[in-house]
Every structure is written in C-alpha cells, then in structure tokens.
Image 1 (cartoon, rainbow, N blue to C red):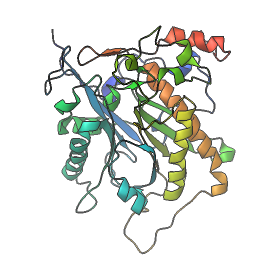
Image 2 (image 1 turned 30 degrees about the vertical axis):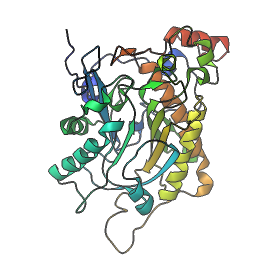
Image 3 (image 1 turned 45 degrees about the vertical axis):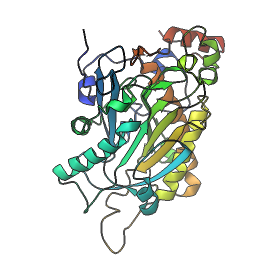
Image 4 (image 1 turned 60 degrees about the horizontal axis):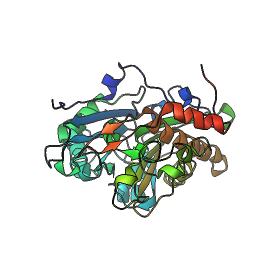
Length: 385
C-alpha cells in the first residue's frame, strides 16, 4: 500500500506529542536557553514547515519516493514587509543561498527566508515572490528572496521536483511564533547528519541582564558530517556508536567522503547592523566545529544572521536613526551563537527518526540509549529521571 502525501505544518505539529530533545536525554550544553529553546524565542520570528512524504521502493523519477519539503522563517511575522539588517557568510560554498548579493550590498534582508532541497530552490524563490504579490507585501517593483538548500537525493526523488508553489504558500501561512518542530520536517525531511538521520533543529540563548538581556536563536538544516567525527558535549560519540553498530550511509556509497551541507539561520533582537551580523554569522562555524564538522570540499555550509532591532530602518527618508551595540559588547552574542548552533545540530539528530527512501536507501536515527551510554562513559551525561 502506497503512502499518501503528508503535509506537516508548524501549527499542526504542535498538537502531536512532543519529541524528546537533547537536554531531555541529559546532554549538557553551555549557556542559558530561552523559554522555547528555539529561534522563535526572538520576538517576531515565525517558522513554518511543509513536509512531503510519499511512496516507497524503487526510484521512478517524477513519481517518487518523495522525502522532502520546505521550511520558512519570517523575521517580523508574515504580514510585515519591513526589512531586517542582515549579514551572510560561506564557510564552504558548494551550495546555494539566493539573494545574498543584495544582502551584501544593501545590508538588509527583505521578506521571508526559506530552506528546501537543492533542486527546488528556484520554485521556492518564485513562490515567495508570488505570495508577497498576492498579499500586497512586495516593497518595490521586484524582490530577491533568500532561499537556501541542502541535498536530499539519497532518500528523495530530487529530480522529480515535488516541491510546488502551494507547498511554499502553506509553509508561509502556517508560520508560527511557537515551538518549532524538529527532525524529519520541512526542508530537513530527507537529510542525514554524521551518517545518522539529520534534518531541522533549533536552539536559543538568553543573555543575562548585565549583558543586555538579548536573545540569539538559531535554526539549522543539518545534512553533513562523517560518523567518526561526531562529538556530543565533547564526547566522541561517533566512535562509540560506529558504523559497525549502526550502518553508515557512507558505507553504501561508491565514494565515501565528507560531502554534505548545513544551512544556518541566526536571529537576534540585539541592535546589530549589517557588518556586525556578518561577524555573528561567521561564529556559527565554531558551533559546527564543536559537533565535529570539517566543512569538506563538497560541503555547502552557508550561514545568514539577521536582527529584528531597528524597525523602519529601511524606510525611504533622508536619514534613519539607528541603535547599534558597541563592538566591545558583542562577545556575549558571539558566544551565544556558537552554543546555540551546537545544540541546534544535536537537537536535529535527536528528533530525527529512521527513514527509508528511494531505492530502499535507509538512514538510521541516532539511538538515544546508546547516546546516553556514551556520554555516561565520558562523564558528560546529566542524569535525568
């Protein structure tokens, strides 16, 4: 019996029983998370997913199996067209993030941001523009949306072009400021990470009042890494749960390697301007490194950071009055970005479930009990009830 297409939007997923997150398993992380420990802890930020799952067995291009989707992030809520200051960074550029030429030139990101699979970037970009036109949110004669990708072709019929404009519209309309579903959802549906199942993950950090009380939130689409390099809270978990115990995707490939990608979106309410946000985006690379990432030649490791502060700064006027945090006070935000990125990657893996896709390819989930055993062995587990 064939599976039917399943759409999972943020508003629907909230009614399901919550999955355990890394902290629930006793994984220790540095820093203090926000109330939701998600990118939506930054006020105004909304996230929506559309998840597409259909079919099983042998690949038939254009028919399936389908294991893909789209994730959208709206900085100021889906009915606002007020741009945000932004900066982007490419750790390794074997990937795509559209719209970044204008982000670099103008210092602003305009409209929603989306993440999908590699071969759906174009349709998602065009659908965002169509949605903005439909809702009267287009700021000028044209738009240059930011849309990023990672490759889900191991599990998904990536050349079947199954992400359609209506799926982007659904993700946008369902975007919510509440808890963010993780794992096999949205653009992260068909991804793998450190040869375990990967996908979408998020985390946040709340700075103390003495440091400004600002929030930093991170969302990742994690599709990278080799098993032997995986670190969790500093413990060599990838060596403890090796490919001899749980099969690695790479062992079934004709050319094992470090290829893979990760897209990282960093949001903050701190009053940072474009060049400071580019600095913040760079620090996401250190969060990846804390999980064992190497950023190989085949990686598309591309990051963007934006600030919800300074509303109205892009309005047409002779001059805009801005608030800018002193560079001498930015270190706490750098630290928060590193810690939140690390946790978002592990959250993506903890939430992800074993998935079988095209040609019966299978990517196994990170086993929770074995993870806890490995952390306990190295004295890193926080014992929970």
